[in-house]
Image 1 (cartoon, helix red, strand yellow):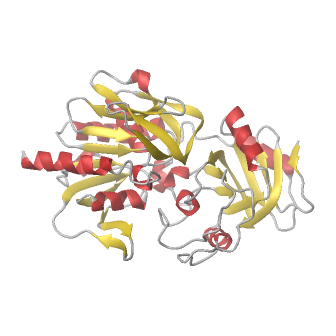
Image 2 (cartoon, rainbow, N blue to C red):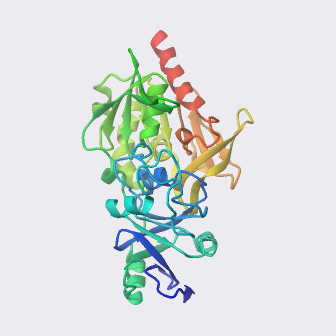
Image 3 (cartoon, rainbow, N blue to C red):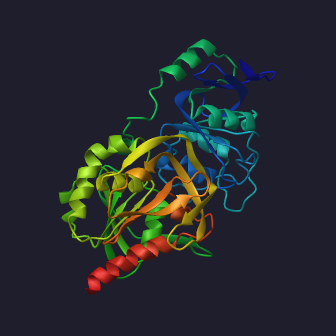
Length: 386
């Protein structure tokens, strides 16, 4: 079925059920196969495309003005785009922002990522909601030559994210130190000075701005690869351990991450997790995770702190969730989504160990959730004082 026809389409999106959307291609030429999700954020497309949590996914942006502020070197969350591609309603326009150093289309082409515009993203979003995140093949050919049958077959052959460990692919390969702090007007990024709280961050696909928030909260951060063992972590004598965000199936990553986290939990060390790190902590404590229908992707997700009654506007990006019904005794549910009631946070009842499903560093509130970094730092200071 052809969902939309243009005079001369230069891009097409083929879904595994046979639906095909035609549009205009931009960025890199070629094709890619991935899971398709939609993101409802009105800003931050560069941060989204470079968020390692989007590995293995093509992102549909529901907001039509994508590309209007261009790109710059400061907004990357990692070295290169990680999302497989992007789909938008309107073709990107010339940037109109004083921070822009390049156009989105040029940036995508240089980074080897495919973009597609000129399609009905509302219809596509409804399809994702109704059938779940579909497997797709996205192709860009300036001549408009597409083998639709082959593209649909490739979409159907895509194995999907269930059972797939992607954290190992996007993680750093060796340890490094981090002391850059959050961006602030008019000086930009800062640098943490003096003695800090010793934090080991396990990188399952860490975003740079998370590390900046830790540094801004007074942490001296050492980043270790996703495959780091408990012995690797504890050898650095940390005062706190951070579990980062990341992509893929948490149970697959948990094969090596859960034993390491359990080894850390044997010590009286504060632990803080975000996104995949939240799911890893839940697995280590004995809970389970499940695949969601279409996940949570956006910067307008209301989350309720069930202990205080406070509602935070949060940024989310996850296709798996912690099953709150499997939380063991001694592990409390602290936050829930006001969209669907799914779990968004946990803590241990008797120890400074906690995590959240959402991204407090993304600041859509804008500062609703920064207290979590301060809570982590305060727990380490209490331990140091004791």
